[in-house]
Image (cartoon, rainbow, N blue to C red; front, side, top):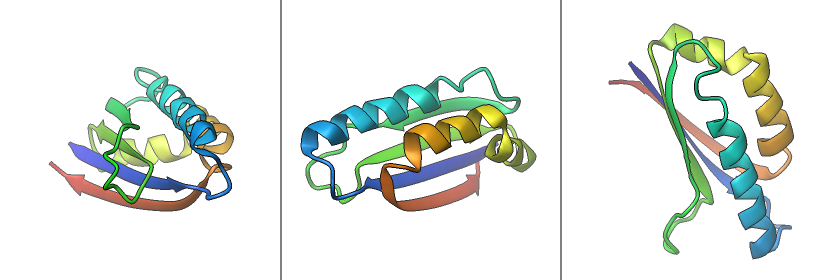
Length: 100
């Protein structure tokens, strides 16, 4: 099993209300991929970080293998969500992949 974790910080230009709407859009889009991509066994987006956090949201996903993660990275449904719901709104992306 492989964990794929991403932490994003949204662009500064958005108000708190806009950020909440953006976070919910990212959550809905990415979590809708569950069951659609071979090898993806779990996907969750955390949007309710504590005030002490220095990032806005986190992706916590699990894959059967590193190869399955590679399939996900280029899968058309994932790319569509990333291009429409994530990349336009984020300024910082940090990623950690690891075996469990």
